[in-house]
Image (tube, rainbow, N blue to C red; front, side, top):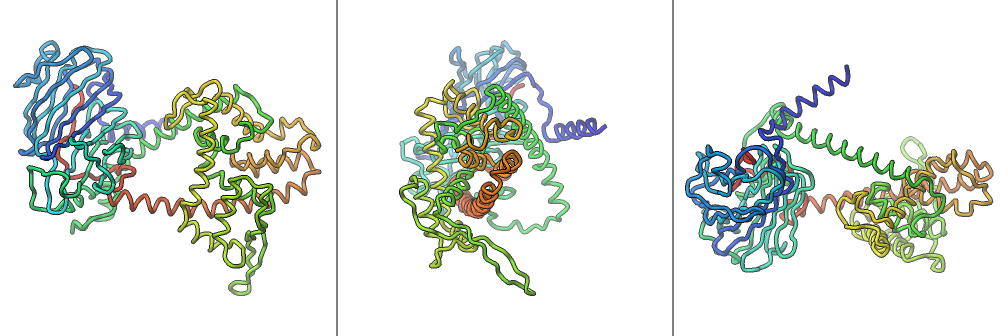
Length: 564
């Protein structure tokens, strides 16, 4: 019964959030868009579509075009050659009449760019056209809010990339421009003297790709001059987005209305996207588990003892968490005697005592420390007060104000690990995210050792074959267990299996808890500072992740499109 209910709920979500595609057999794998902006504000656009097209007669792109956004110079080609551009497109033409042709179909809200499917199967299309007066001149900036990919497409693309450059080669940078994007899961960045927006998840019928950008005065001389400010354009686009609110609409909306609108327009699609992501993550995890079982247990230190390589590879395949290397670094400093946990009791309200554990700086032991130890100890040294003791409040303030120092330590390990993996030729290509199929035989061996050790530690009480005397590396193994986030579990198994290690393991466990607590304190405050800076940067136009909502007032694309 429960399965039926869940199935019904899923069907409702699918019906509400994603209208059924008329031509479900068609699939657009990618849309790559290049936009070149000229001095007068006109824009030359190239849309490259690739996918499988097995039904229908044409592809079409509805354009929500005000009178000033005139189109010209339309050309289309596919892998077999150029198309003929016809003056009056008729959507009722047959497949054969549309084959090898393209044209403009005028609609009530603007026009549609149309071109024949021409041949069923896997196709690559390139549609090029020029739009006059795309970028406008405003009192404070020059810019445009432009929709490059429509919502409600009946054949949605899996991947979308938008690249924007200036025709004269003038670089578009963070110093001369501001950028934002709306309607999809992805990012927008300044790359190679231009603007790059790209999706990180397949588009659904509810998604769209809208880019808002402004340029400092003097870079362009737009033919279209507007009386208002670009700030007004930005305020309109920000409505319904998760960027900072600009201005106030002046309308009061009830909590219930806001909740229902959010649920129906945003909540359901997001819920389905989350469900799909969880499903994909679960499938990827099962693949990793099968991979791990194929390699079996690994009972020694992996990756030639390069902890950085284990961390970098573990991050790529979700074996360890971001920043976990910070916990092992603190633990190592405790083991080296550079840090010493100090228990104190504070008398609080009504005479209640509260036990806290601080970390006292005991001095560097250079002869035993590596470069990572030296760096982390120096960072912690700068965080301590005159008493050379790391207090909770001190560390919170320090991590919030000096998050870049902590991130540099984490990236130092990650960079060294990636260098090792590169030298060992472990990956065929450095995709994000990395897949098991990207591994070379050498990479499979390195990952097999890592996952094999984790399995060995998880099942330690079942498969341990060594006596205490044969385990001089047990502390190193525990450091790896901490990197994998299973140290407490492994410590308990070791205690049960080797009672004679109980005292040492108890001390180690206390140090581990202290190290992890301080790692959590530093990492959580570091992340808070990073997220705050990222939000400030993206809201002010410095690039960053896209907003799923917002983008209102855009020109260019409209709604619908795909194949018919």
